[in-house]
Image (tube, rainbow, N blue to C red; front, side, top):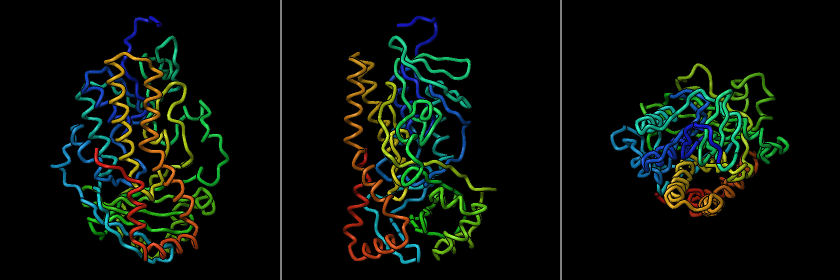
Length: 380
């Protein structure tokens, strides 16, 4: 064990998104010393569909979010359209609610601060190394020590590149090179509905969030973006061919000066552990947005890991037993969901295939129910 005179935290969390903040809150409530690194400053907008299934409702209340007193839209219906505009409608058995990442992340951040989690904003982590049984987290000229390190940095980070994680080195095609674009808008759209409108090599979701605003977020290939001079030109050339999207874009009030854009999104499988750093949230694998529910997966992963870490700290068993237990529980909870998400992601976006699939599903609603159920979990 190294001895530098520095404080050794129980857990260092790299990434202050949903998985990182919720993990920090759970550990802090259990009396653990936690340090969290976030490269940006709260609050902030993020590219995200901003729909959460109700499987996470009770969990978020236990964390301390006053969801019952917040005026949030309750979503119980799903609508899906083909690129030409053919619609199918379906009931969401579990349902969900809408809330922006701006409000959600900021709410969790304030809870973590109240619980004395040490949060370093605007702090980019350059490396995490296990040295003599203690993790050393380096940021610029500063370094910090921790008994456990967890990576919750999201879809892609400098550490993914530095560690040469397998999904980074893959050729940029297929499931490896998507672009996400998000707006907040005001529009005439039912509060209880989430819609998914397909277009060539992409799909766009819309649902209500707080303050009578709506999240309009779409995913498409990097090739689509490169073909046009601007995002707006691409939208008019491709998205507007779907009459439902054309109507939304033409009749809505756009609240951002410019869209939020994120690139190099990969749906390839990712490892649950790298360099003895356990991963949670999108850093372990991204579920296709057309399946929804990525936020609930981040929360559930944090719950699994928090329970294991608290037991590990209290019982003092081997770190490798901890790693192995987490990998097994993570696979049991998410591997089938992510597999189904990658399968569906590979099928949608191709115009003729999407038209055929959705028109066929119109006659087999029980299959739609099974697909939804396969990408969602039970309340926890």
